[in-house]
Length: 173
Image (tube, rainbow, N blue to C red; front, top):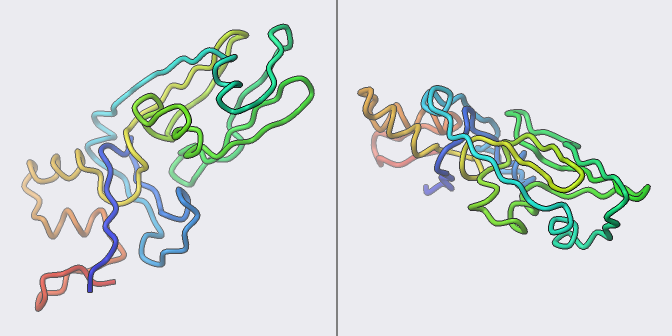
């Protein structure tokens, strides 16, 4: 029986459940796992965006002389940002981090594993990893293979809710 085998480039140290990222109720993608490669060799990235540009993209009125605050509203169990909040001109706004990545570009905000801060002029994202973080980390899988792990051991690590059936050579829930 085929399964959904999500994968991504680099998890940033720990994978995440599908529910935490996309709010889906998939029974076999319930947990994330630590990734030995990404913990040892994290992909660090940073992006700075002008506050006025961000507010424009989010369709939030921005008054140059008004201070604003931006911060994390919710995090997932593995530490990814789930939702951010913006306070400006005595109003509060919230946005899902995946929606934010879509607006700003996935090559800019490489993952939702980030910290966020701001100056009066810009918003700074400091993050690790690349991709959504669900399922198998490609760089982590390559690292485990180079360390001598078999494909069965690698799949078992990244998809702990599944087992490989010896008679069909497929993953089973």
